[in-house]
Amino acid sequence: MDDGKFHAFMREKIQYSVLCAVLMEACKIFDIKLARIKVDGFDATEKLINMLENISADAIILSGITFAGFNIIDPFLVFKKLNFPIIIISTKKPNNISMFKALKTHFYDWEKRWEIIENLGKIYSTIPKHGEPEIYFEVVGNNSDWAEMILKASSILSRIPEPVRVAGLIAKGVSNLNY
Image (tube, rainbow, N blue to C red; front, side, top):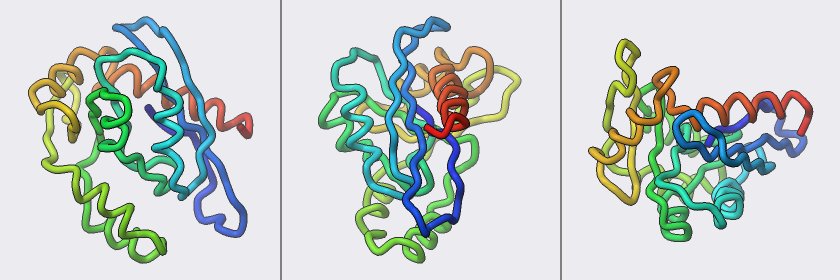
């Protein structure tokens, strides 16, 4: 799961970005789902659940917890509704202090957004592909050993799991079409 491009700091009008989910096994793509989400909105969780409610998967891998700016996906609600474990990855170690400051400064509903981030739990790291830098991850609905196994099995061409890498390429390409 990854998102597309958007223009930052254009608060005078509502903007949208693309949320893309790619269902894969090894290098084979089985399905692609797209949804339009509001930049800095709070609709990404609902859109994700709607996109994935009729699929079967071993896990949902998110490229972070925020999409289209600060449109936060609630992995606990996604897990509750879909019963798929969630792995949240990042190429940089998450900085919750700067996230907290940004949310508190720019969002009237910062407390409900922060609560999701605060409840995530421990940040783990792994090297999913030999010779590549580490990635950081959090997991909801399973344990870190399981998540590490999924990340290593799905990181084929780079340290980024293949479904996330492909979703990012598609979302950014579709964003260029003014989706």
